[in-house]
Image (cartoon, rainbow over all chains, first blue to last red; front, side, top):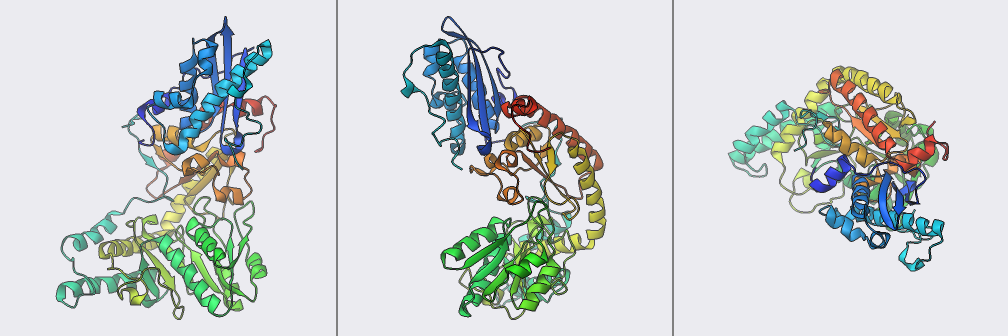
Length: 144
Length: 403
């Protein structure tokens, strides 16, 4: 199918890091069933390093591929580096996404940030709130 | 190319378009290769084309139960819908009638034309189509007002296949003196239609939905209904649709329609059996629901919602298994909203995203249907296994919408 790059189709067909981490150190869920995509990211963090990451996604091909790629990009990385992951990096790693699917990559970035925020909150670590999306009041994912 | 399943190719997206029939292709060939004249030309080359045009028009008229002069060739169903509605609106507004009755789940060719008229000051009443995807003649009767100039109700829905009580609606419109148009794009060639007996004033059809070529359709308008031109220019189609006629496509359409109408009984019997097997097989999937009335639907249409998954990923994985299908999910439309048809029958956004439309043709086999049932079950189960919504639903954290 020419809609997506080979890279997207590969990550869609064979998603990396699918699943759940029991007692995860950070869990982030973004999106809305109403708009047709929800991503949930689970992080296992040891000594400030993301030693394991899993995801579950309800969504289209590019949503699943974006989650898969995003988890690959942060696995084994320090938390500070994961925090710098942008949707643009996800799109580039996937060899591009169609314009109307770019929001899937944004969702992946936000899901990871939400999981990191959860990790900070759970561990009482201070952080700059402006670095994190405010999903509760943002209509980006779904304006219905 | 994807050949993940032995290069199987099961095409069950016939509501989108159909494969052309061999006889329709053969009917076109002489007009691509030898008889190339312009039917408006006086010379013999042109007259050969003109004769073919007359013949094709008569054959199509016979299939619809009307006379050939009531037919206007268009570029397809959308143009026919546009022209029918705009014409009725222009007739109406001359008499001060600016109210139109339609349904909430019409094709966009109808809905967007109505929206345009609304901006011009027309009032539009969209009838509720209920959970079963059917309007009643009584609803139409109640909605008609003294200033109603048009009732436009689709013959059969393109997504969920439900068949509307067209003859009864036609009778009400006739009695009340209101023009009645039906978008019959999904019905022509698949259901028995006689515009005269069914009190249809205007009807739109498209050739590529019954194994004819793309880019050609017909607007039937009963004698005495003045049409408004959408395309100005030459005097083709009795001055109502300019542009040199697409003779090869018209010839292919006439043959495809004749063939489809001749085989309606045989095809209906075969398709209904396949459809019902597909419905019973897919109903075994937990938390799934059939969209549209189980019986009053096109013989080849099956449409389901599966809770906890999204339609585009379902389609992509089915494609990998060699199955060509369709979905009403937002992701397949490029907008944030899922199908307006599914929303109109009361499916909430959350489950409308997880829809699957399978539309059969007489070429499909029982074996293909069994394979498809298995493939859909497998893919739905897999997508649910990676869906956070499904986790919440199955753990009881969220309540199922579909029982």
